[in-house]
Length: 432
Ligand code: DLL
Image 1 (cartoon, rainbow, N blue to C red):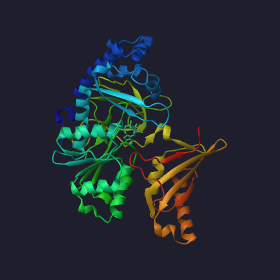
Image 2: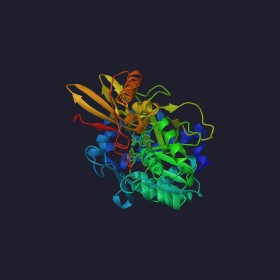
Image 3: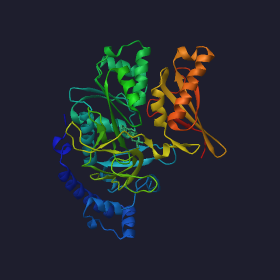
Image 4: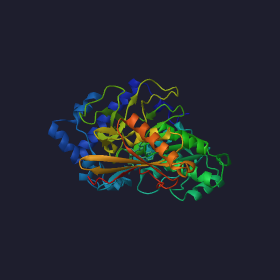
């Protein structure tokens, strides 16, 4: 099932033709209306008419989060405020929020792209879609909401939190598709168990999860607990919100909506393109946005472009799951470690619960990392010997796979904070 088959299954040549035309008009738009870009282009002696091929994009500088901050709040908007019909913002853990805007056309286009992603994940107009993202400045809830309505599904804007109530709504309103962060879906699954409700008492069939990294092991855990098929979808406020890419039911990577977003993957240090298929930082140029176009935006997200074609028939290139952000990377005794690697390992160890937290401290010039892991009650309250064995086992496994020693502490089930939105996996006490 496709939402816009003629656009999702374009052949490469046609797609590239569309991309180049749209790129030219986006560059002209920002050159004319956004002083920040005009200055940069002028400094390079670059004029939007110079763009003859997609490769010419490589001549332009990147745009970063710092540029967005310096132009806070509306400096990078390409239309006057009277044409903006919606504003969103991402809170950001440090400093100023990133403010983004949408024209009426942008909202229409965004809804269509989300409709593509939802359709790819199994949603049709017969579905009852419960949106358990926080409604507000976050793009997740409103973005998915408009896309689901566009499909004609019945939308329940449940918003986030109050898990017992979410479950009651799910049961009484016969929700068939749940939309949330994966960590929240897990909490819903755990709460369901605590309430003694079997997944079979619900009508849930699909889960569409995104907004934070998660592993395949976590997917299996969620699917088992909720009795659903779960897909991953990706996006970010600076580029649009959800709707950049999403998995189809083949679940072999996330199809990028390439007729609206031009992607590059670069080495985060050299800033050069990586070899095809290699992992690097995703860089996105928007091709159709009116209010807030982005040229070569460095997402900081790590992914790779997958080779080959997907059996689903969509031709949009696929990216692998985002494994983390360049700024999430921990350097433990000189070894680079991503929280997602730790998650992957923990989920494979028998007896651990799928809840963990990574605490980072600094002793002198060194980062010290302690992984707190919830373990099954039977292990936690068992003899010291068994607890110790379990701890050693986790420690050894982590050391073996990460290539560096990290401390492990076992904690009782349900002691680590649960999240209703994006999970906070890393507690950073370094005050860098
Ligand atoms: O999280 C947009 C979104 C909402 C996407 C709902 C999907 C569903 P921001 O709050 O601006 O926007 O955060 C964007 O979240 O740069 C990634 O680091 C991370 N992220 C988003 N989706 C995924 C995903 C929304 N599927 C930042 N896997 C991005 C891994 C993700 N990380």
